[in-house]
Image 1 (cartoon, rainbow, N blue to C red):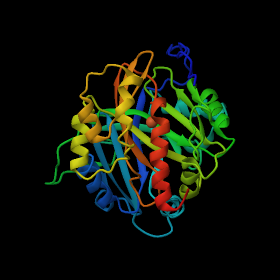
Image 2: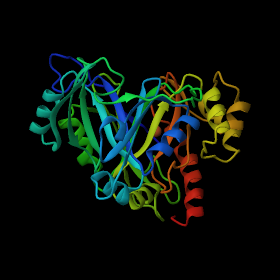
Image 3: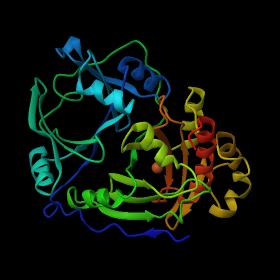
Image 4: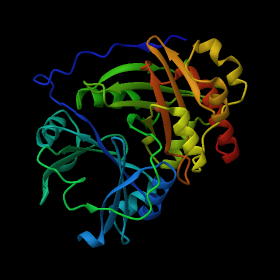
Length: 377
Ligand code: FE2
């Protein structure tokens, strides 16, 4: 099993780069009950309250809670009445990621460049301002109904975006050590992976850094193909998955069936102490996938020496993989909403720049056992 890993091209010459992206700005989920979802992300994942917009700030049709942990900003948005675009989205897809917002130096240039290169329009550049300054945003479609919003905030010193107010409550659980988004994975339909790989190349100036095919990633039932796209500075990584033929329904197909189209499959968040983070998450009720215990009998033969105590990794179900540059530790939650769609990955990198290919087989077999229970295999 050869991994097809290509070095990141030197794209990040700001003067040359038509699409300089500074990082992920925020991730917005459309959810059916933003107030309760906000409570869940505080309680279970340790996100901190940051900002709010809704009836009290002059909105009539929706409300949003903004939570932060490390550099990760989540926005949870629900409609306040029937017949809204947000409501339609939730009816079709269930709770899920609507917006992956990208922090840019200039949202007008980003929008114009993307449209010129073939992106589908979502939001023309719009300037919003309040006493803390102004923010320019614009947006384009990516796979399915998922959106990239470009955010230009160099003239803004407020909490989140203009017209949001500070959100303060007397319920503030501690953080769990989540620091930043390592990568976000999209599931697209059969035969569409290369379409979206080309979209990220041509429209957003990304480069492909890794690819896996169905020979790398297949169990008896699950097969998928995946290519990993990265922006020039390496801060934004978007693996794109498509299903491949297997004996039964793959987890990617299950996702596409239940999300009723392409969308964000998982958000991988980084920690610098995965044992501490996962122990905390487990104690707060976050449910993780478990691989069979015998995984730990042989894992050190595969990955060699590691700093962590294997007994603790086994106890918590944390997985290990190694590449040429080092190793990584990772674990995956079960889906975090009723439909078997979006989940989280917790990852700690110790040199490795890859995505845990050595764990895919054990992991997919664990997912298949869950699918079996759901009757969707
Ligand atoms: Fe991942």
